[in-house]
Length: 400
Length: 135
Ligand SMILES: Cc1ncc(COP(=O)(O)O)c(C=O)c1O
Image (cartoon, rainbow over all chains, first blue to last red; front, top):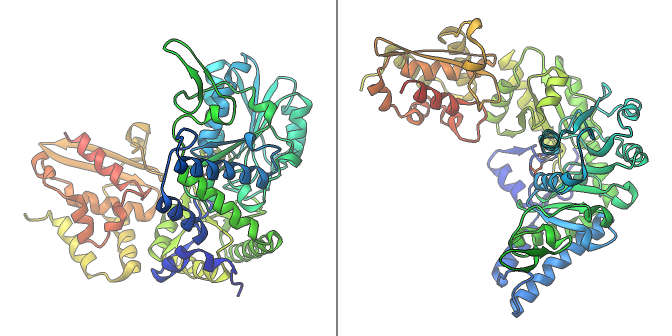
């Protein structure tokens, strides 16, 4: 029995438990701690105002809190300057911003390198950019374990490579990628680097300084914060390469009928009213994480994953995809369709994810039509896993 | 309105089933025995229902003004859902099809949740395709 000391911080967990639901889908989106809910309620209760525009006192207070959050995020992820933090709607929007913003720097024949396990969000913006500009998209192959093959990467990343975009932690295989080495390979070629931290940031506090990447992307909602806010970190020099891509209020410095000029980052990339409440909620989520003992969280999550993997591996016919290092595991069962399994688990109140997890090409590569993903967060405990395994056994009993 | 004979069978069987396990067993049985199977050769892109995570193929024909449906899926429970859906509408004419409340039908069978928009089993997409193709 391994209880989570942080579970009581998340009111939704007891509500779901009372309803007979076991939440094991945090890689899709995470539950929120009370302090995040309080921050949202507090903000809307104390009076909202638009940021960066109003000359009045409410506006000043909200703008200050909004900008303080930028500072909190910067500090949390090791950015040199709050101005390196751009708030987007989510991770997906951040990738699109970078892809459109950098388009002018690439020309036909240039190469963009991604890995075989990318989420659609870190695949399609590059694929479409390549199609628009006549670039070549190259795909880094994986080891059987689900890690990028560094030896092969060293041959794929070459003097035509202009940009490398890879995931830090796979949302399907749960594998930590050798991003540090990949970034080094890309930098040797003078290529820009984009790290998809949508899963990684949740399970290991990012340090963009140590990573040495140009861009790092994550979504608030997976990091115990509200939906509607994502983060694009860009190294100051790298942000300066981006062309503006969405136009409107807030991002403009000076406008006339027939011409305008625009703010630099970060405001220049935050066109229109941002998700102010969600940004403040993200600040509260990171404040919450700051208060936790990171080693304790990591040990807890590691023990949960071990329990999960042991349980899966001892069951006959269960096949785990790759060799997960953290946070989640996907599995298939011989002769049982993932959809049928998902159906039977869901009937028993188990919230897991079936399908291809927004990584269709990876599934084609693995030769699987779909899998079940069990994903963990710091509020899960072994009781959740016990319930999952009881439900799994019942489901298999029925379906086999 | 009287139900088609097959639909009445489904209703009798599912009303008598208690608990999700018995309903799931019935679904598998219906999927194995009562689904008008789309021939292998017709399981192509044109017949594939977009919007299902699981591959589902559907063929809608109208013969003598009557609907004739065939479907296929690799997932056993999905086959069952297809079978009870088809049992309700096969052989109806266009006018009768308009009067069908498919949510009410699944609800009567104790399967209402399977039509919720968050489901990726594709029953909603299948239903839309039946409506479009029979127009
Ligand atoms: C690895 C990875 N990248 C990107 C995303 C996209 O995140 P969002 O949908 O919040 O933009 C996800 C979320 O599913 C993910 O798991």
